[in-house]
Image (cartoon, rainbow, N blue to C red; front, side, top):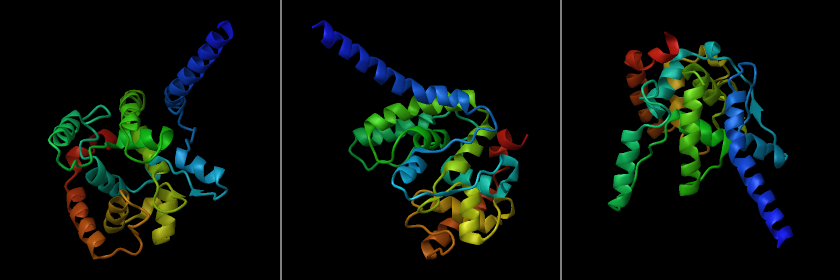
Length: 227
């Protein structure tokens, strides 16, 4: 019995360490010269596939891209504290009513998922994602949060971060992206394996035009990043 109790204690300590590790890393990632890698990058390394990621500082990313991503992924990024609780409540109500739910992931939530968790829909993953997103938004500045997100987001098989994406799709550095190129990259984010920003179909071009118009009017929404 004593051996069994010791084994259970060890197991509990291991679980607690695994749960606590992302929060320790959030503190570590406040240091600007630290360049985080995502769980998907680690997966690609473990499978010996490798990946292309070229870290770029926030100031070296075109504002066109930042505006387009915000308008496409999280228009309230500057106003919420990691989770858009109004959108989250609406999604829960839709689920309880048996309706098809829409996405309510914010940029902090997507960053937490990409850095520490896994893809796929799961209540367990979502329950872990929410406090991580709140912690990241609280500890990091909005600029640091956006910088990390744009440097770990996946834009195609083995293509991570906006610099690698801009070079792959448009043969340009991230700092030189036009409004249309930025919009195409932004709308490809939800499904980068099927949405090719460099070779967009009509549907993707239509979405990009919509995001481009929204981005051109996004001044009030991005003040937390450029003030």
